[in-house]
Length: 353
Ligand SMILES: [Zn+2]
View 1: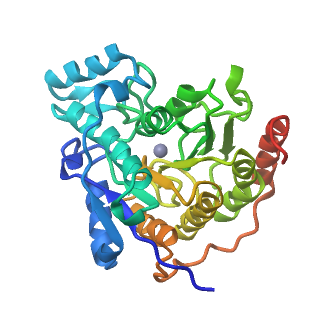
View 2: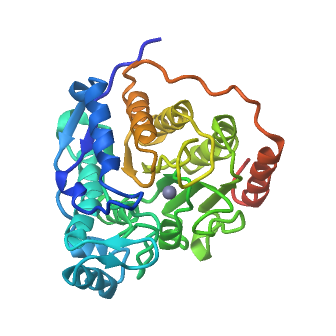
């Protein structure tokens, strides 16, 4: 069976390189390596480049305290520095962070509004990342929670009642969970290493109030690889998505579960990431007319992340590029399957698993 190739929207701006710090893992080279990989793999004719617009304050204020937003602006006016142990700013960081959140909003419009040749999918190559940013706190290299702002704007402007956010970054998306913990209109599903930063994301955090049952945490031990991630998708993520029937699928795409990532200890390969992208794209075809928006979160092995992104785009666009080397074909490890079983037990109350 052959599938028709799809063009994928890419939202990128050179100003995303301005927020950077030479001694920090979350630095501009992350995007430079992605740009180089797009060129080397000769896929520039398969993508549609879209310029991002900055987010409006009122959009960011759907997720963040206005006083916090202002405090970021003021901190940047006074120069370079750190807002906490991990999270740096430079004088332009406020402006770039608005452009980063705005990139995801631009991506949203690109796939949901008419025009753009019927584009269904887009990937936002934005920085700084967002999923750790809380209502009134910068955290974990993140200033504004880009994906959360996009989900809130999608509710407000498009009237969606069922938005799914899948966060495959190796760290728990604490800010995103907290933004929608009480909201059944946004389903949050996160795979992450545990124990690891930021320490949240336990199995029993299943949502609160009206949002009970709409928060799915899948904490996994160091060493989890392609075969176990695949089990998590087959047994938990895809069945829940198929029951929720999202109208829009957003992905917090962090490539730091890669086996050579310097900040984490997982064992994923390019093939595993390609599998996740393919599987989620298939779910998007079933439930959201193929609409799927990915935004960059973490991923600190420069070459590794760039290779993964080429394969993710390949999967989304059905371009048939050379396949990545297959996983070790290792059987899923028993102690990791036990972790999945714990998630299933915690979620059975809400979902048919
Ligand atoms: Zn991360």
